[in-house]
Every structure is written in C-alpha cells, then in structure tokens.
Amino acid sequence: MLRKNAKIELIRSVPLFANCKKRELTRIAAAADIIEVPAGQPLVREGERLAREFMVIVDGEVEVRRRGRRVATLGPGGFFGEMALLARGPRRATVTTTAPSQLLVVTSGAFHDLLDSVPSLQMRVLRALAERLEATAL
Ligand code: CMP
Image 1 (tube, helix red, strand yellow):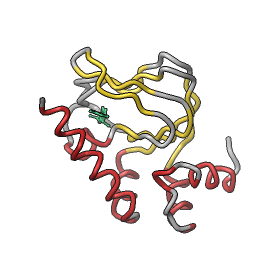
Image 2 (cartoon, helix red, strand yellow; image 1 turned 90 degrees about the vertical axis):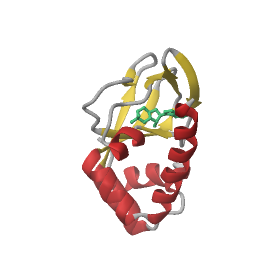
Image 3 (tube, rainbow, N blue to C red; image 1 turned 30 degrees about the horizontal axis):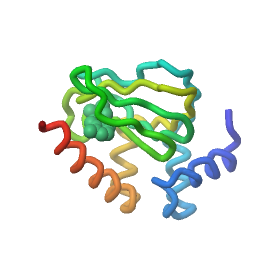
Image 4 (cartoon, protein in one colour; image 1 turned 180 degrees about the horizontal axis):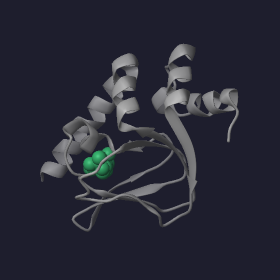
C-alpha cells in the first residue's frame, strides 16, 4: 500500500491529472486504488453489462479490441472504461494488458464525482469519448 503522499505524487505524474490542483489530487487519491497487473490480463470485456470501473494507465500497456480487431494500444497516461460508465451500457471493447502494468482504478461513483469536481478531467474524457464513439460507430 502506497503512503498517501507517494500516491498523490504518482497520480500527479499521469498526464491526465497533470493540471490538477493539490486539492483535486487529494480527492483523486482518496477515490482511486493503484493495482499491479501482469501482461495478458483482461481488464474489461466487450459486452459486459456490469461496468463498475474507470482505469488509468500509470505504467505499462493495454490493447483495446472490438469484435476481435485491435482498435487501439494505450500506454502510460491512457485511460479506458469511461464509455460504459457514461452511457450506462455494455462495455464496447475488450481491454487486455500487453505488458506488466500499474493502473489507477476508479469506481463508477467516484468517477462521476471526479468528473463533477475536476473540470480539466471532464474535458479530456469528453474529447476521448467523442473520438472513440466515432471509431466504434464504424
Ligand atoms: P468501455 O466501453 O467502458 O470499455 C471498453 C473501453 O475501451 C471503452 O470504454 C473505451 O474506454 C475503450 N475504447 C473503446 N474504443 C476505443 C478506441 N477506438 N480507442 C481507444 N479506446 C477505446
């Protein structure tokens, strides 16, 4: 378990949260867990209806597959899981680690709270959502 300050520093190092104020980082640290995952581990499965988590890659790499085809590879600073949480629908892709990874995991309720309270996060998630929706509409 990371000490609170170490956790805040780790979160601050993620580009998604780089512009956050100390107060916001503290809130994110309280809402998120850091997990270590080996390569080859499915984190989210396409079609799954019980979507509970939003994840941010601190370190490592994941592959995003939709209908069996790879649609993206995400590295440090990348995030996923926002689509099902925002749409309250099924997961649109399967996300699997392709390298040992360190991830920040935020549960659904905390994700919505963070979007309400951290405007810079809201904007970045919204932008990614728009791009991904276009890609998944094809
Ligand atoms: P969600 O549908 O909750 O779970 C699967 C996730 O994969 C999805 O949220 C997005 O975060 C991510 N995802 C889906 N399509 C793409 C894409 N084209 N590029 C990057 N990530 C994607």
